[in-house]
Amino acid sequence: MRKKELKQLKLAVPKQETPITNFLTASGTFQDGDLLLNRQGLRFISHDKENSPSYTHPEDTQFNLADLETMKVIGKGSGGVVQLVRHKWTNKLFALKVIQMNIQEPVRKQIVQELKINQASQCQNIVVCYDAFYNNGFISLVLEYMDCGSLADVLKQLKTILEPYLAVVCKQVLKGLVYLHHERHIIHRDIKPSNLLVNHKGEVKITDFGVSAMLANSMGQRDTFVGTYNYMSPERISGSAYGYSSDIWSLGLVILELAIGRFPYLPLEKEEGWLNFYELLETIVGQPPPCAPPDQFSPEFCSFVSACIQKDPKDRMSSLDLLSHPFIKKFEDRDIDLAILIRSLDPPM
Ligand code: ATP
Ligand code: MG
Image 1 (cartoon, rainbow, N blue to C red):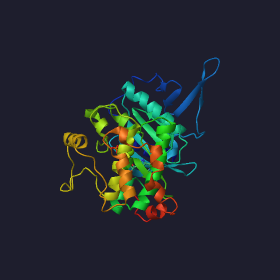
Image 2: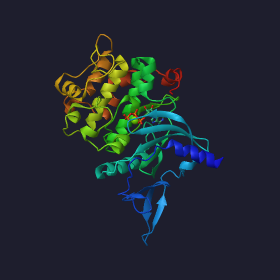
Image 3: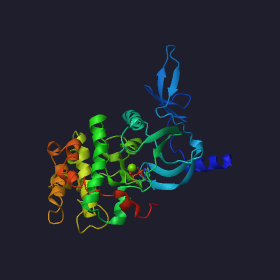
Image 4: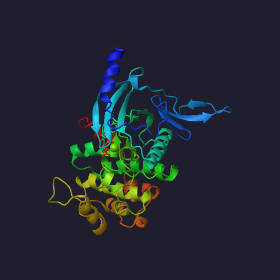
C-alpha cells in the first residue's frame, strides 16, 4: 500500500528535463545563509558554538513528500502544476505546487527570500506556505488549500461581481497588501485574478509572491517572462523602476475587471485573444488609463478604481490609505456575506 502511494506521488512530480545542480552541495542541499532547502524540506538553521548546524522549523510541522497523497490536479500555471494532496496521517488537505527551478543567482536569492516570508507569514489574507522541498530540479511548495479556487474561476461563473461583494473582496486583498508592503516591505509583482484565492469561508488570500514566475523565469527579463503582462503598471511594463504602487495599479485593474466582467484594456470588438506584447505596452503606456463607467457604478467605486489606476505611480493611493477609502467603508456595516455567494458556485475543477 505504502509502495503504491509512493509510486503515485512520483508520477505526479514532473520529469526533470535539465539537471540543475550547480548551486547544490554534494548532498543535494541548497543553502543560502540561514536557510536550507533539500528533500527533507525547508529549514532555518541556527549554528551552535561548535558551529554544527541544528535545524528548526518555524511551524513545528514536519512534512514528508511521501506522506502526501495526490487526489487530483487542481490547476496548471506557466511555472508548473498544482495538485490537491492529502496528508496521510492527519487527513488534512493541502495544495502542492511543483515548479521547475531556475538556477540564476538573483532568482535564487529572491526565491529564498520569498519562501522565508511565506513561512513566517502572520497574515490572514496571505496563503500560507507550510513547507518547501527541493527535488531533482523542482521545488514543491506545500500550500494552504483554498477550496473555491481563484477569483478568475469565480468570475468565469458569475460574469460580473456586484459592488458590495467587491468591497469585501477588496478589503481582504488590501489587508494582504498592507501586510506585504508595510510590514514585510515586499512588492508582490504579480497581482492578478488567478493569484487571489478564495475558500468556502469567504476568505480571500493572496498567493504567489511572483515565486512561480521567478522560479521559471529570469526575474524582470521581459523576453523570458512567461506569465501575463496584462496587469503590469506602465512603469513596470516599460522597464522603469517600480515600487509598491505597481501592485496598486494591478489591484485597480483586477477590481475593475471583476466589476465589468472583462479585462479593462480588451477592446470591445475583441472578444477572444489579446493584443500582442507591443500593442499592450503601447496601450498601457500611451493611452489614458481605464476607469469605471460612472453611469453603471457608484461614485465611491469609480473613485476607488481611479485612486489605483493612475499612470503616474505617485498619484496612486497606498494600500494602507485605500483600506479606509469610502468604497471600502461604505459596506463595512452591512454584513455582506461573501461565503454564501462563493458557496453557491460550482466547485472549481
Ligand atoms: P501563472 O503561472 O501564469 O502565474 P496561475 O497563477 O494560474 O498562472 P499557478 O499559480 O500555477 O498559475 O496556479 C494554477 C491554478 O491552481 C490557479 O489558477 C488556482 O486555480 C490553483 N491554485 C493555485 N494555488 C492554489 C491553492 N493554494 N489552493 C487552491 N488552488 C490553487
Ligand atoms: Mg498563481
